[in-house]
Amino acid sequence: MQNNTNTKATVLFDLIRGRRSIRRYTPEAIPKEVILHLIEAATWAPSAHNRQPWRFVAITQPEVKERLARAMGNRLRADRTADGDDPDAIERDVARSYARLTGAPVLFPGENHNFTGKASHYAERLRLVIDWFEKYRD
Image (cartoon, rainbow, N blue to C red):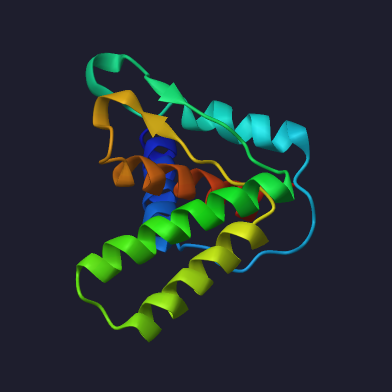
């Protein structure tokens, strides 16, 4: 039993340590059952008082991804402009963000109602799940 526990802990540690953000995607659509499986896995993330306040949406429609990418780009541009950043650097950043969002086969903009506006830890957990699933799926 101890050996099995160590093996599981080692596998988990290796997954966490080896997690990388994926920013280049293949054009293949992700099957609906895979998307549902990922969402189910993400619902098991720890939450304050075990309330599981997750809200998910999977965006696969190109026109919706484009609208979201434009809105996020406008917000990024406004925030960076207010910070006094170089306009050319801002536009490169906005273009890079747009390409990543519209190029992904599916977007999972999640919301954790306990941490509104501070959900980066949640996004990292979801990326870990997605990265793991991509690595180990059949």
